[in-house]
Amino acid sequence: LYLLGFGSPQMMIHFVFGLMICILYASRPGYGLEMPHGVTSSYVRGPPSPTLPMESPLLVLSLAASNSPEQVHLALAEAGGMTVSWVTPDPDTQVDSVVWYREVSSPHPSSDEHSAQSALHSPSTFTSFSSSATSTSAVPEGLPSFLRAVGRSSSYSCSSAACPANYTSGRLHHAVLRALKPDTRYHYKMHGWDGAEFLTPPVAGPQVEFTYTLLGDLGQTNNSVKTMEHIQTSGGGLVILVGDLSYADGFQPRWDSFGRLFQPMASTRPVMTIEGNHEKEWAIEGSLLDQLRAYNARYHMPPLTGKSPPADLADGGPNNCFYSFVHGSVLWIMMGAYVDFSEGSPQQVWLRATLASIDREATPWVFATTHAPWYSSNSWHQGEYEGAGMRKQLEHLLLGAPVDALVTGHVHAYERTVAVAEGRVVEECACSNQTGSAGRGLVHLCVGDGGNREGLAGIWQDPQPAWSAFRESSYGHATLKVFNSTHALWRWHRNQDGEVVVADEFMFTKTSNCKCNEHEKSLTLTLSNSKSLPRALLKSIV
Image 1 (cartoon, rainbow, N blue to C red):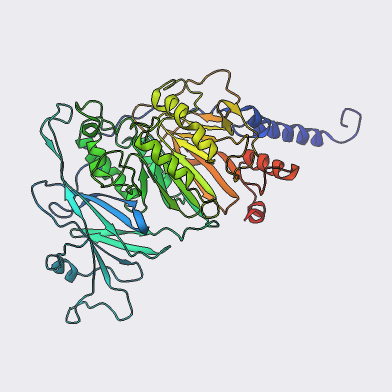
Image 2 (cartoon, one colour; image 1 turned 180 degrees about the vertical axis):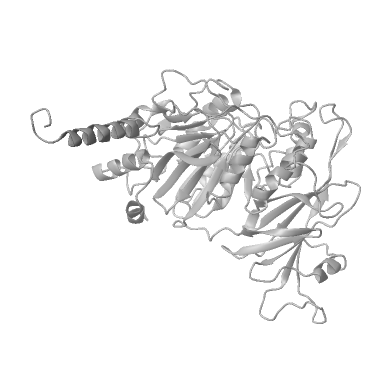
């Protein structure tokens, strides 16, 4: 119009300036017309950071009293319980594995409780305790009594030169807190440790709103610290860690230093783990059990139900290599890439039974995890049996269930695929709530970018495969917010200049049948492309 003699120079300047802004905005990773064709982010991240030195203030042993509890972390237990795990450094000093806990509305346990601990031993794993009426700090009337959980402790030794030789761990304690009310905040403590608070899971059901945190390949670097700091502010009430925790690689003191670094995050919310290649400590000679000993001794996940034996052969004890649990509206299936998953193996027998028992009325969402990715366009870890071999053995089982997404790590980068089945792209809005529906695909999400010392995997396949929707070599973590039975929002949070930035997001949607109308298809694609979801739109969803 300006060239034809209409308008003013100022209007022309405003138009050009606005056009430039639109072009720049649309060219950012995850925006505009790039998304349907797949995006390789152009963000330039900083250099990798080395493992924090053992003398770092974040890793050194600092106790209020001699042999006090340290390395405290939580995990969900069976039947609505909560496992508390901790270490007392001296392996030769027997310390009671006792946890005191109560609803947070009650006052903190008094000093009388400490003196009562030695007098209240019981062979049972759970007892109740109320302060005596003659106590100088009696429990106020109307408040719930203290609860007392009694666990067990053990230690292990390692004679391998990698450990180093003649290493003996501290006393490793595990106790299960039971009789917990759902969606309730509790305070817990042990003798010599002031304690922390956690929120119990909500009542399971198909319409539970909840935010989960997902990450992998964490390690003990400054990048690891940033990731955990961001997790504590991003709102996730349950953490899923898909393998590669400490990067000890046989050097056992690094398990202790990781436990100290991990404690601020892991003592206030449950963390569910699965083994990665760094939990299987190849530097230690011996059997699979020898190589998994540190991981199995320090972390306790829920035991398997039914007749399937534990993958770690822990004599009916906790099972850390594969298991499942229901939380809110989600069935989480945790698969082990470093234990046998072949036809007829205990893991595959368990997986088939677990998938066959899915009740979409109770758990409309089903998410699976394992360590090694099944689909990756990164140059790292291509063709490994733990990824490619597991996909060949188990993909058809997850597709037939169907499972909504598979979350992995191992490759030190972030990647999200579109729905894919046996290497082919599947229509994004193919129905996801019909068992065995034809054409159903699986979304794959790799979050192996927690902050480890090995650095980022920065070489990607070119051209980008059709099934790869977004990929970036940066550190960070993901959140999954389940709104209800039909909508769940996935976000990947990049560690950028010390700040947390949402760099990719995607809305999972479920339709009432296998026919998506144009509105539903448009909604799915719009939400997939959006950077910030309008509040009014989210309100209309939920």
